[in-house]
Length: 194
Image 1 (tube, rainbow, N blue to C red):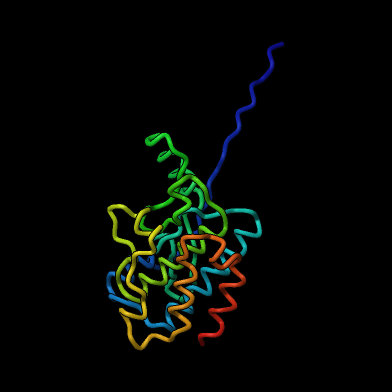
Image 2 (cartoon, rainbow, N blue to C red):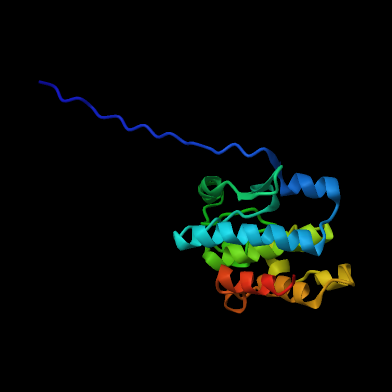
C-alpha cells in the first residue's frame, strides 16, 4: 500500500492596523516634537525589548516599519521581511548583510548584526523624526558611519534638550561596545527626558 505524502502548509496571519507608517507621517508633518519622538520611541523600544528577549534581531528597523494606529498605538512590523531582504542582498552581492543602508548599523554592512544593531537603527529613526533628515545621506553610507560624519542633532535643533542629543549620539556610535548594550538601557535614558 503506497504511503501518503504529507504536505506541510504554512499560513501567515497579519494584524490589520488602521493607521499609517512613520515615514508617511513624517512626510506630512515635516518633523516631530521631542515629546512625540520620546512617546513613539518608548513604544518601539517595548516591541524590540520583547523581540530581543525572544532572541530576534529586527535587522531592518526604519520609519516605514513603524506603524501608528489611529488610536496612537505603535506597531513594529516586517520582521520576516528583514530576513528576506538579507537573503536577497546576500545572493546579489555575495556578502552576508541585511537592512536598509541609510538605517543599518555599520557592522551590518560587513555582515554582522546583533541587538545593538537595532539600537543603532533607533538612533537613525530618532534623528530623522526630529530633524526631517537622515543623519547619513550616502552614497558611501559605511564610510560616513565609520567616521560618524553627521551633523549633531543639537546643531540642527538648537533648543533641543542636551539629553536627547546624548541619547542619539550614543545610539549612533560606530563601535557597538560604546552604544547602549540593551534596549532597557536606552529606555531608562528616554524616561529621563519627560
